[in-house]
Image 1 (cartoon, rainbow, N blue to C red):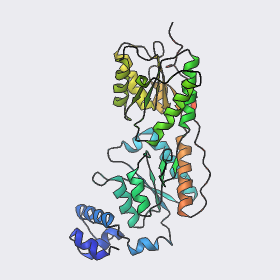
Image 2 (image 1 turned 90 degrees about the horizontal axis):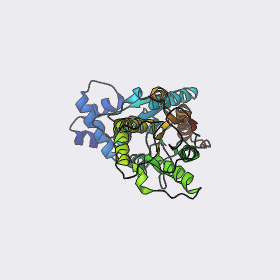
Image 3 (image 1 turned 180 degrees about the vertical axis):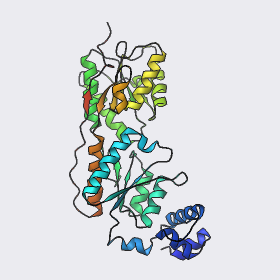
Image 4 (image 1 turned 90 degrees about the vertical axis):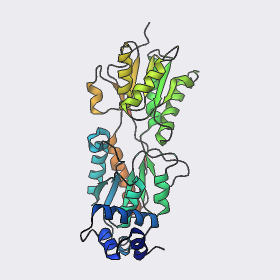
Length: 335
């Protein structure tokens, strides 16, 4: 087991400096602090005061923001954080937001956990093979994830009922007469991606239709990704008459691609997004989308993580339902 002396030797500092960094005392440069925390994570050093925090909790939950994220300026994240903060406060806990342009998410979480200042973490965008979760589990650091639980992953995953939402949205398009319906999906590395596909495919196969692989495009998460995905669909000999996008951001990008191609959304092609961010009601035309209760998901994440911290039975959780909000981007199949 690593000692403070081991950390000091590898980081090239004194043991006093290591103590200053871990306790938040003294005067230490940002570069030195960064180096010490990196070594602490690499050696999986367990400070004495972190061990004491097992008995006297910090009553603080952590949310690690990936570097480069728009942070709280993103409506989806802001609502999730609001739910987390409110539920945590109701249980006497605080929420700490953290990020670092140099360290990976898992190293930031490990470094904070070793200081004893955070009891557990929320991971965004849970992945199928999530190295962050595997690392935190091996280090004995409590955490929950935003996303569907993955097979073999010890991290509790909480998400929306994306299968049910995609089923409702795709059925609505079929009711309008559409048969060539495309799916612009999330990256396959995200656990939520498969849930969306399942609902989409079920809506097609329940009426005897086959899922056309050419009408399914795996995209990223940005508007630019949605634009590129829609351009790929439009380049086919026979394009779709309706599109389900896995997020409003992807739908916004798809709208741009359709507009650039001289195709009128809501008349020539039907489009449905997912999330119902504030902008969705103010696009031209206003976007039909699946409304996601992000604040409620944030509260559920807090309740689950606090139960883990306090070694209580985990609260039961049913994926939160999505509501179809019909606006102006859906239309019957053109004659």
